[in-house]
Figure (cartoon, rainbow, N blue to C red):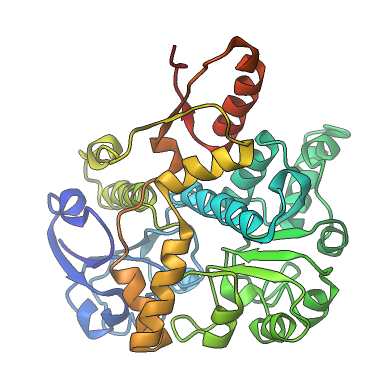
Length: 406
């Protein structure tokens, strides 16, 4: 078996070499000619798997994408050709939530407000949005959610099961998008890109909805760039300039609107989910799927792939305000300002499209919050209750909390 793997997929040799010959290519260089003698293809989001790519893929029997999203893959075409398809749902969801939390706290610090005093609206409550809601709630942040497909599906399921009123309890806090815009001042987008149908998300935030955002609002998009009308957002940011944006995704990647990126408080090159942990989960999930498709045993475990984190523990003493303590712990693991600055430097040297791809291709090591154990040093017994609250916040944010130091 011959397996073609995107060059940015980590641990490909460890996972796939025992199954066949592994060929590596950068994702944007994978073309029809490169698939002529390939049995299995493993990609990330920058490779569009569509008819033009598969024109000469006569041997191809499996396609896997090491990503949550699948809008870059023509799944119907693969099914018609009898090609097995697999994605990696949830693989990098924790990393995206890490990105969102530290980005929000970074902007809160920069602009002089507290996250705990804001109401956050989460659009899309799937693998990422659902985890974000859970962590924000555990941190005591007031949240609302908007996910019409989930509301519809769970309501139908509850009705079929005869659970009268159960859907109301399960979907408490879910509102329409326009209600969410009216009642929240922080908006986090985590929807897939759906271009047609009753729940289409293309330009979900269109000119009218962007205009409806209240002054002082913050928009964070770490889902899909095409879910936001970038031209209208740029006009609002550059015109009235009374809202803020944190953007990890853009329309027309990698040739994104450089002026929109410049107007964002934080602009990063579609790397919210780029933790090593998330990438390795994705590789492992696709390895297992490929083994199932070809009837082969999977002998590699995820634990074998994950290295020891470079920073395993952090001790916090007294005197830190709680959100400052959270920022300190989060930045010890990951600071999105690094990626913002990296994109700005690369785009100025190489142009936006080449700089955007260069940042992704050479992305530095990054781990997840869950790899860090935070210890709280208790110096005075009257601080115990405050420390317990901080410990709960740390756990809610995704860290492990160790034993207090005497």
